[in-house]
Length: 215
Image (cartoon, rainbow, N blue to C red; front, side):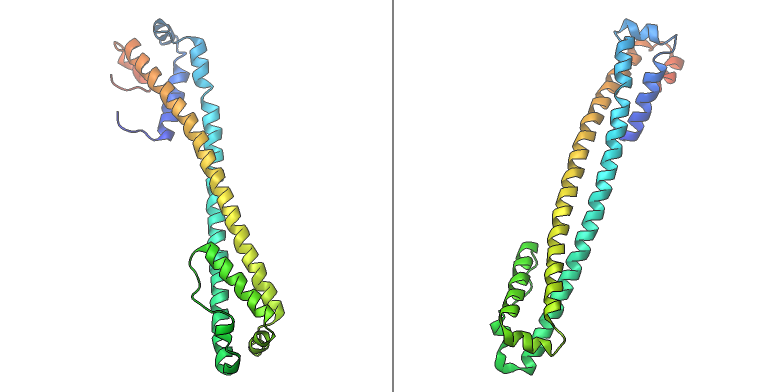
């Protein structure tokens, strides 16, 4: 038997465990040790799998949303500092005596998130510590309020990344729980399927009632 999707296995297992109580099937299965207690234990596997799947789907949705939010704020942040670079170049052209690019240590915006955060934070620190820089940039509407806005934006980027990592971790944990429970159900189905094919080998109709198909 090739790989069967989880949803199909759950459906087959529910059909098999439910119909295992059929008056013509139960005595035959009992011959192979499939008691009412075993059947109840099998049935008890279904709700935890369903709940784990629900939690997994919710956590995965949260992780996707957090990833989208993280990418959006990163894009906004990078665009803001690309614009700041352009303003610095304009201010440098207008006031070359300040040597703004050299004083502020302007370089290429790093791609890596941590490096970008460090560079952007340092750039704002240098701008605020240089009155000449604030004056030169102020001509283009860059104010202390804008510095504060950019710092808030950097904080949002850091927080979005933390949230994303948390949500991804929770999604991974939920997936691990679901897979563990689903593996238990698959094993139980495999055993029941094998027992049914032994117990009902001479009665294709009863085997079909168990959802097992042909031997």
